[in-house]
Image (cartoon, rainbow, N blue to C red; front, top):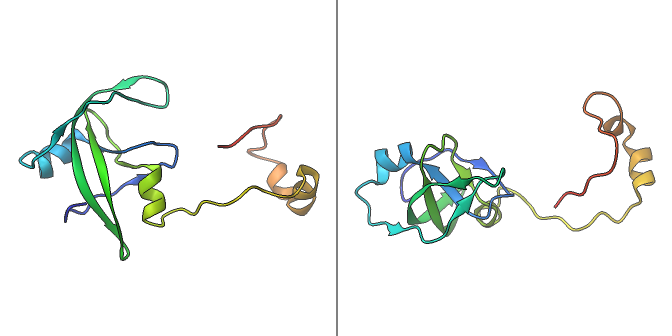
Length: 125
């Protein structure tokens, strides 16, 4: 990120890329940043305290993208948001499954039994 190596966890459920204030203080405190205008909320709907936004160049394995990176107070794990994940080819977007649930269960029976098996139906987005 802008020439600094930062370890991210991929978070395709995140609308934005976020960095903790420790990374901010260590590498970017003297960088020209923008004030965060938008409020960000975590997965439990709690408001996150955003310090600033860095317009960053992210690079990975020959791919790059420009991304607004939000610096969040007390964030311990850096999260690479959905758009950056797709732009850097860290994940691949796939189309809908065109088989019935019964066909999938018959083809992959081990996935639907034993440890980790949950009752009911769930929708993944």
